[in-house]
Length: 209
Image (cartoon, rainbow, N blue to C red):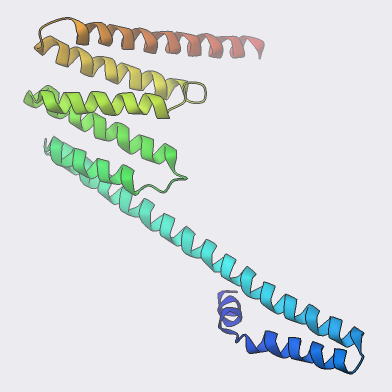
């Protein structure tokens, strides 16, 4: 199929021009039926080239997207390796790159890598006393709460809220004032409400069955 598509793309416009020339000759000879047939052939030749180009574009897009996903997955593994070596900043950089590489249609996979990125920053902040890393993790978790739908992915949303609360609490313990701690409590409450609602929904569904 690919060879046929490429052959069509390589076809010279002379084929279309020849059909149009035949149509003109037929009209000059007062033969409209032949002219119409030649013009129909010219139309089909041109459209065949368009269809072949569209098919090849789709194949190239698919190959490109798979390549991006493969590269993102490899970077995610590098991030996990760095995490195992306690190189959290290095892990965060790899995971950030993984999310950036994900094609636009792979929002769920990009969200997964962003969460791992935020988790790496949390570990950097928690274990190495890096408050700036905690602040970056908080920003990432909050971004995820905007991207992840509470309606379609309630448990993922609740998990992100919990992670946000934990990070806010850790940072709040190191700062003066209660602003971070109060925000942490609010995040925990949001997560608890959603988990409770989800548990009630599951119980109701089991009862109906």
